[in-house]
Image 1: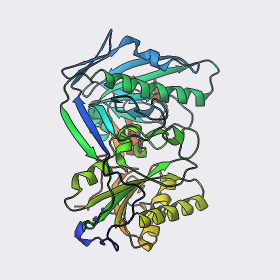
Image 2 (image 1 turned 30 degrees about the vertical axis):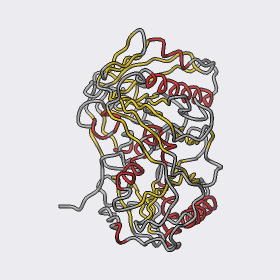
Image 3 (image 1 turned 180 degrees about the vertical axis):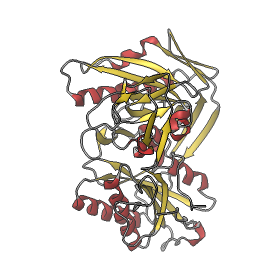
Length: 443
């Protein structure tokens, strides 16, 4: 696709066919309070603390990763402007905690529905795990230089967790220990800010019953890559691979209900940090009550077989129809296989009379002239490009690297000058909208 298709203006979308459609639950009394603390600088000290924008991690914080599967971990800050490269990135988590507990349900808190109460957010910081795991594709973030803006992590203070597996440890146990440790560390950091005055206080209303609003009811469908070990996503602590599509309140994501365990396609992956800050949901929420009604968010697995993809697409379309949605924005996670998940859902929704807009990253070759999608919709036409997977970028040499000593994709030192496709830059083509690349008409 040579340019992004225009999303239909709200007044062009179909109005609900029936006023007062039935909702599966009434969340009109549910709300989430967010106290946002801006991290302006970071340090290492004896105790974890947050004071006037400075986040200090205590030296004992590494004990949160104690596990028979890990011989040890190393915690290092990498901040914007540092001559540092992070390689072999796995997950990224924004530090958050809840008053009364419950953050990251199923891993840190109990697997109970979240999205209410009070949540503290450390904005401008991230916990980043980095190192070798099987099936994890090489990923890179530069904290300075021309490639810094390509990844959202180039703008955050990143507490990088490097690790050494225990002798003879099973890789799945290593992965699980890293995940739980990173989530505990994220809660630990945010807890240091609970007594500090927030930089901003927000109240996110829960999704209410449809009512009789004349505004078009717009929702998001978020596909989660579920392709087995090391390419999986967890909802309330459990793999979502065998689950049917589910309608949830976006506030649940704010509290870490969705946690990534997916390490493929670095530019296209949706780490936990991005689910916590879901850009599509945030954009729809900002327009709620003005020119659209933000009606909900559906999460859906990405099955590996054609039959599973078709069944999931039919289920999503029926769920959206029954919820009374007029339009849906659909996103994917992963490469060409995931194109089918978006395309099939777009066609199924259009057949139901629901306007469908799909976000895709193109795989159009280095010069942009190849077919952009592995599998395109048969009938639906509203598509938005988040950039070209194959576009080449030049990364100058850096002084030091975290996450590993080598850049395995090119078999060179991790600090070396790199000429790579943007596909390896972490989050650069984000289908959820946190990336900064797109396409435009040739001059």
